[in-house]
Length: 158
Picture 1 (cartoon, rainbow, N blue to C red):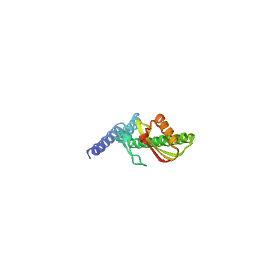
Picture 2: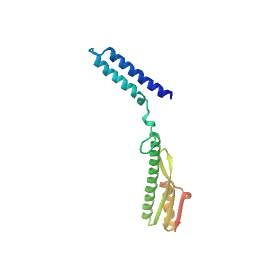
Picture 3: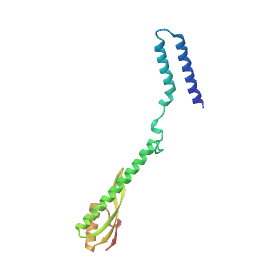
Picture 4: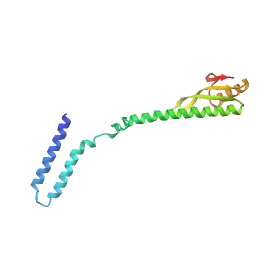
């Protein structure tokens, strides 16, 4: 409440000062220039609190989130999109390699964050039909090229 009182007092004093100065110079050459300067001073006094507002801390009118909250949400969404891309592309790569070995399977990959904002495949779940030789060959490829050890390879089918 004290801040509002101080703001109103500043406006009143500024208005009083401008009107006194105009009364003293009424009809003289500098009267119009003084009226212009006084009006500008009054506007600046009235708008001064708005200049102190940190617009980045104000919530967005549509989402209700602040700028930092929006950035954090966007960062998290980007992380999930990147994780999804790594998982989908790795699964597609595994299925292509399996077809080249004569296998019919569907791959599902789980990725983990390796470094900041980068993901690597962690585990693979493979469902389909294959022979034991094909399974061993693809398992070796996954371990060598994707660094998915056999313990994290789940094979369903046969």
